[in-house]
Image (tube, one colour):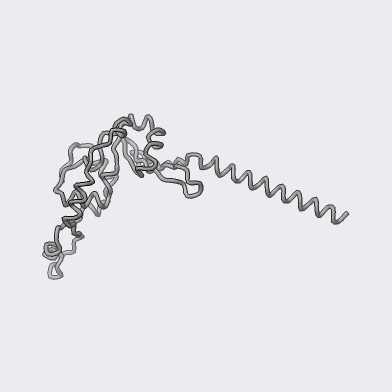
Length: 192
């Protein structure tokens, strides 16, 4: 595996789990058994990538869509390195590198537009200084973000979430206040 540029390592380290970088990848069970046999004193992490999975990976390999280029994205994470097809197929299957666009400062400058455009098609993208995770809030299904900067500090941006929750709480309080006033008025009338 070789990187296409020096800064590609930063992006890939933010996406690929360390255990996946240390994986032995085989194309058949017989080859895997040569190194994982109980006769050997070592224990290795290994997996088998079939020819079908390699073929599926090759069909998934696509160029960056033009609508992403217009938002400041330069490539997909799968374009940041070169490797034999079994290695690329494995990393693609465990980290979905073919679905993660890599952006620039232009992407950061129009973050709202980018998030709105990608909300139904992508769950993660990276820029020079941000790792952005898009998800829909469990409570109100509105778009929410998790932003990680270069210092790995997390900022959760819940777009419209707090406004919606506060509005719901205020409505519930108003209704409960109305019920309490009604009950107290009925009690007052019953004791009079």
